[in-house]
Image (cartoon, rainbow, N blue to C red; front, side, top):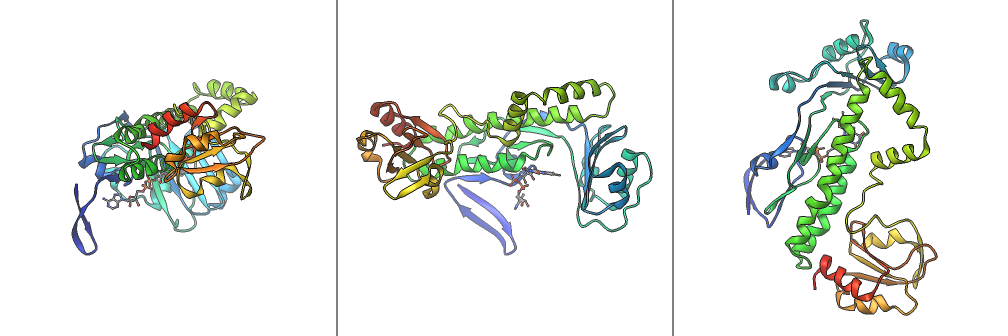
Length: 341
Ligand SMILES: Cc1cc2nc3c(=O)[nH]c(=O)nc-3n(C[C@H](O)[C@H](O)[C@H](O)COP(=O)(O)OP(=O)(O)OC[C@H]3O[C@@H](n4cnc5c(N)ncnc54)[C@H](O)[C@@H]3O)c2cc1C
């Protein structure tokens, strides 16, 4: 395909086998390639400024506060407000640069008194809870990753992790396709694996917005939720969700932490992924699996060793285990599925 780009030196045409749009929430690649983007209209406006506001550090104090007028976060170098009455109404408003005066007005509405911002903020910005997800991450030779594929409010700080994991999932599949190890069906697993993870983040960020709403009707729900978070299993569930440690694909879970004794010494199993290649870790006493996988040896990194903590595993370059210690026949089927041959 040919892609036209306009840079400092004018227009250039680039030829490539694939194009990956990593151009953020307002992705031009997504729009030009015609990816449908469905979801929910925004309901809130968040504003933030990198500036010290000493009177807010005094009252209401550092941290997050849910007040009658909205939510405020105060830190020594940043203030952030969230107002729940409406999003920035029209496109013209959204595209207007954010100002110190707009931040001061929002602070006053949220805390219920005029607030003096003593210096020009180093950075100001707005955000909303606009929530959108593309229906597929791939249209032919065009793929999307990061905010280009999914848009949601920033609560829980999940967007960067979500986008990086898209890139980890896609990178090796694209390389495998280009190098001929894998066919189209491996590239199609990108949408199948990553879209449900993004849908989960969109869902939990909307739930967070609902729980932050200052309406008195939400207060009992928050109190109930707070009590539930004291239950260790609930706490663990929510922690795993926000950190994405709960991500599992149909093929398996992320390689667990374990020590492995190899001919080159004892190492953490995850360090064996540093080559960026698939790894077969054969911990059988007679290297059965290494023999079965020998013909994939040009691209699969085959390592023999011993471990008291895990069994033999085949690990994809993104760290997910796609085969675990069954039979050599199962292993070769899995190798063929993911790495061709
Ligand atoms: C207020 C706020 C707080 C946040 N806090 C967190 C947090 O604590 N933790 C977290 O994980 N996430 C957080 N996020 C979300 C996180 O910032 C995003 O999810 C992440 O930056 C997305 O990365 P990306 O590379 O997909 O897109 P972007 O970071 O948007 O990068 C896209 C890049 O493409 C460039 N680009 C776009 N169009 C073009 C074009 N036509 N030509 C050339 N270049 C182009 C842009 O200039 C930009 O550099 C926050 C977001 C907001 C708004």
